[in-house]
Length: 167
Image (tube, rainbow, N blue to C red; front, side, top):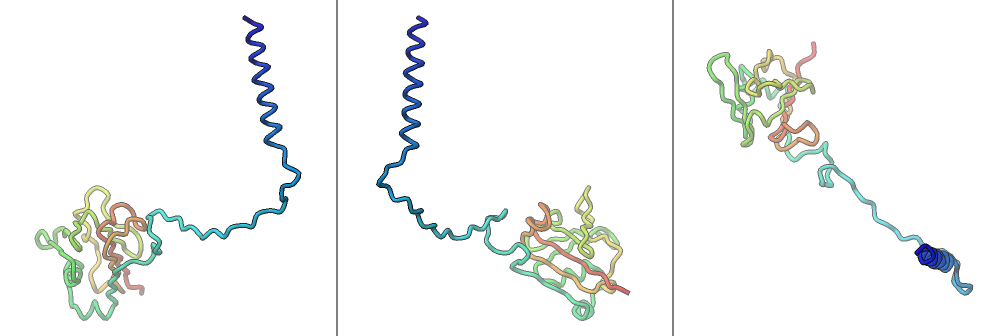
């Protein structure tokens, strides 16, 4: 029994050595010049599977200081309500405001003050309960549409950046 196993082992070893020797030998008449390198087109790798720049969006509205004064709003909800696509629902005087934009609800919008996120982490109902009035703002930047890849998963509906005046 043992001799039969030894013979099989030697046959396998002989076949392996022979195959390795044949694979490493080169023919004498083979051309030894290297093949020309192929030109490979560049490949764009993106987390969003889109080839456009993530910093550019399709629709941005900027209300500068002159435009804010021209609209004559007394509250943020009133100011944003003058922008097409916005729906600001106030729940009574000096109460919370639920903001919607282009069909997105208040939980799908990100509110920034000077680039810092101010959304309430426990509830999204208080998105515009901020101690700011339109008179305090230098400009309002409104990014319509999905901005999740730049501003996080809850920016499906858009982003509102309130830039305050500097004194």
